[in-house]
Image 1 (cartoon, one colour):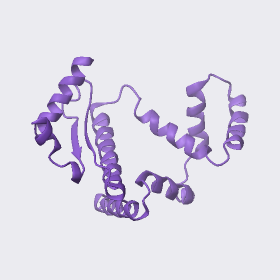
Image 2: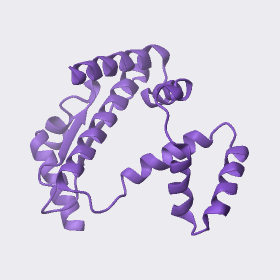
Image 3: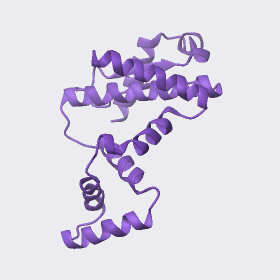
Image 4: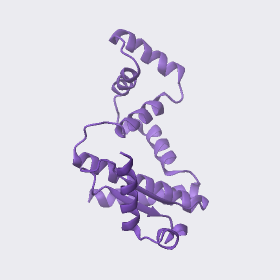
Length: 177
């Protein structure tokens, strides 16, 4: 039931992005900014992670810096912290196989939605391949996508179907590791 609702939201978001000409992530960010109090997050905790990532300063100094940070970046401080938090998701080491799979699938879905909206709104076509780079752990992490205007690109230009392209890509990144 929840997945069905999320799929409906995703379809509506893609349609809204097409009609408005704005990227889906920009619409999501705007929605969250306007309705942030519906699902309050602890900005202090976000800031603490942000701050300690860059410096090793005592708590009392951190608290004062937090207030100055919000004052200095009055219009964008919240977005800065959210983007920082998102970026750390992609760099955290030590994730389990299931966590990596979940992150991979979530990322593939986000990229696909953004690129599909970009194609619909602006006629920008895309072909992309992504794969996990840990040889003995990421065997199932492979994904290829083309927008409608780039359909059959891999077969016609690379002479390989989607599975073969993913295989070639994995071989390429595994050799480099």
